[in-house]
Each structure stands twice: as structure tokens, then as C-alpha cells.
Image 1: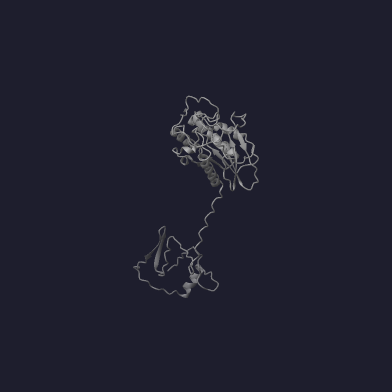
Image 2: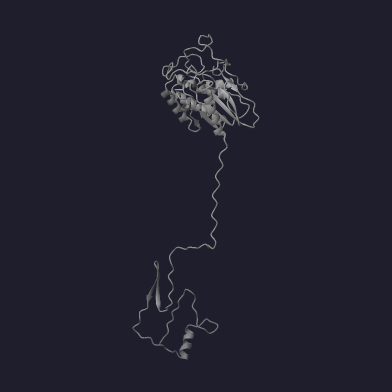
Length: 351
């Protein structure tokens, strides 16, 4: 681990005939040793959109990792816990930042970097698994690798990228992806296909696209190898996109809108009780009407007049005594007897 060096001004560009000037034929991958890609992968062309005209610093020699055989550098600056820490994992596009040629604005954020130039997705995952961080970052930014364009098929690159994201998510709950900048020496259609596959496997984490910020006609955004971004133009755009994405991911959530106040009850309004159901049949006051009770309710039937005219009969005292013997009254006050509720008693009186 090391700390970020102080930003130093880039050295002046070397003349074309200088022995240390960059080779005229660009290498096929990012800061990696020359290798022959498999026959089923795309071989990069010299230039499709033109050659970059921007300046890039002279590459410094880094120690080689025993895990992947790639140059690797881990930068873990001192952290007091006051600011949010963002851990950025990527390939050679981070080299200018790690070497101090391009500065990342910090503000309320601090950045640490793991840069593995020339690495593909599986090699980035291997280095991430063995990265010794002295603290747990608040967020992890995975820079989508573009070296898979020249050494992997799109399907294999998507599988490796999915495994890389799984490893990153296991180390930090907040992970986001920064898309890779376009290359001038690879067919745009193939690059777009890889971006779509990366975006598909990264559906569970935020994915920040960047291609629209690097129009292919602005050749000053790239250095002459047509692969890497220039220090003065291209990397300035990339670090701003990185900072904006990190700030958005670590910004506090917006406050929830307050609940609308409840309307006060209107004065003088009293609650009403509404009862629904069958309306009861009113009782009839006419004692001479019959009531038929059934499942449909009550129905009042008028009493038909009898064919025998009514004739009130007055009983003699002897008859009343005889009636008392047959059905003695139970009242203690001498009143008429009241049969128990729910029972009717019929008495046969001889004439």
C-alpha cells in the first residue's frame, strides 16, 4: 500500500525522433505485454476513428503481481473517518491518477485505488480478493474493464465481470459500476455489445454510462495509442464522472415528504348509526286480526265475520263455582288465572 503522490506537471512531449518516444504501432491492450489473442476474439485495428492527438505521461514501472503477472498498485491514503471513503478498482485508466498526474476532486470524499494495467475481469477479481485494506470503504467503484475486448469473447467477459461484481458486493454493501471509455482502435459495435452485456449482469447495482461524454471526433481526448485517455482532456472528463457518480451514491437520501395534515372534524356534525337489514313488520293494534308468521315474515289477515251471530252469555253463580272447581284460579288476589307463557290451555265447559 502507498499514498497518492503529489500531483506533478506532466513532462513536455518528446519529439518524434526521440528514442524514448512511444512506438508508432499501438499495443493491442492496456499496458500489457504483447500477446496473440485467440482466433475467436476480435483483433484490434490500427485505428478506426483516427489517431488520438492528446498527451499522456510516460509510463512508470510498477511492481509485478505474483497472482496475475500484471503490474499492480494499491493506494490506501490515510483516513480519519470524517469523510466518506470510495475504493476504486480498475485497469490502466487509473494509472494517471495513481501516479499523481491527474488529481481527483475530493471535497467530502476520499478515494483509494487498485490499478492493474492490462488486466481483464477475472484478473481484477483475483487482485481484489487479495487486496489488504486497512478499513472498510463506504462504497466500491468497479471500472468496467475494456481489455476483455481483445482477449475474451463477449460471453466469457460477461461471466468474469459478474464474478467481479459478486466479489465487490461481498466486501461492501454499496457498489456501483463506471463504464469503460470508448477506444478508437476497436469497432464501436463490438464495444457497444460488451457494454450491453456488462449492463445486463450489473442489473442489481447502479451502472454509470460514460460513452456519450467521449465523442469519437474529439481526438484530443485520447493519446496517440488510441486506447488510453489523454491526461489533459480525456482523464479530466473521466475523473469528474467518477466524482459525480461517487457523490450521488453516497449522498444522504432525500427527506421523506411530510404527511398531509388531517382535516379537523366539522363543528356540529354528529356521527350517525346506519342499520341495514329487513325492516320489522309493525304489530297490529286490531285484536280481531290474525297474524300469519313464516319465513317471509308476518302477514296480517282480517278475521272473517262468523255466520253465527255473537250472543253474550251471563253465567250464574252456580256455574261459576263449577268452573272454579274444574279450573281453579292461581291468582292470590282473586283475579283471573294467567296461563304460563308459551302454553295455551283449553277447557271444555259443558252446556
